[in-house]
Image (cartoon, rainbow, N blue to C red):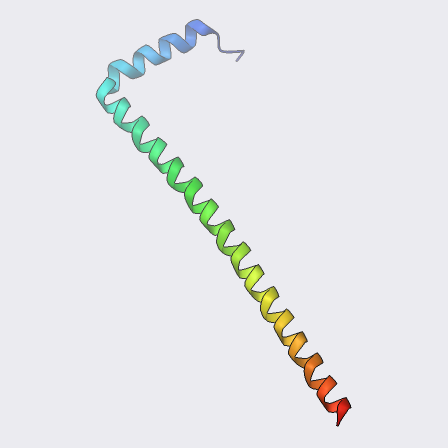
Length: 78
C-alpha cells in the first residue's frame, strides 16, 4: 500500500458519483454542513453558558463577602 495519487482519487470520485448520483451527494453534503454548523453553535452556546455561570457565582460570592464584612463592621461599632 502506497500513496494514493491524483488518478486513483479521480477514479474513486467517478465511481462514487456513478453509484449515488449528484443529487444524493449534494443532499448529503448539505446535511453534513448543517450538522457541523449545529455542532459549532452548540459548543459556542455551552461556552457562553459556562462563562455566564462563572460570572454569576463570582458576583454572588463577592456580595456574600461584602455582607459579612458589613456585619463585622457593625458588630465592632457596638
